[in-house]
Image (cartoon, rainbow, N blue to C red; front, side, top):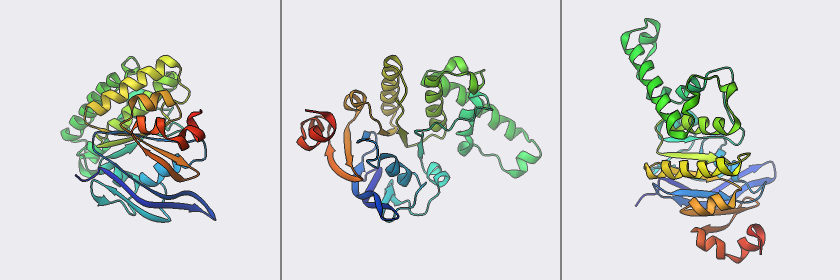
Length: 252
């Protein structure tokens, strides 16, 4: 069976410093696959490489069996890979639903001609995008903000809004970079339920997260990074029992 996301021998050096070195792993379709490790372990750099923000120094990344070499983030999104960011990328001068509709543009069929002349097909696309954005806001748990400005939303709701925007592109795999950061216990529990719901829908989830309770409870497999290298990879139970991981990250 071909992995949905496959990484082989991935390196990224900034000057003489290797932020990621020799990283290899595979993510099967439908999995929740988490990447853990302390600050500076290379987790976000790894996500930036996978999603086309960085070009690898060497190594290979494949999406659904095809190389992603030199593909831009928007081209990867067209092929089914979307993400959220550690530092939220929300347009605060727009409404909440407009933010979600930004993620829907890949699904629209409008072209320059229909846009210039405001043809009926453009209006239908816009109406369809608006309906789908509203559905996704309800789906992620921030439906009460459909008519609100993004600037009026709580921090936790903005986190869910960014997930809704990524889902608007109809991804095969969604990469979530520290989605629980800054959330309280109630919000984190709701996030866990949402991730389960996304995975149950058949969307593969890759997760960078520091909340060990969350990742151990929700992940099918985990990758543990240590100074850019793979320290361990396996199921939550295997990671819990790995002595190197226990010593380095999870405590005695």
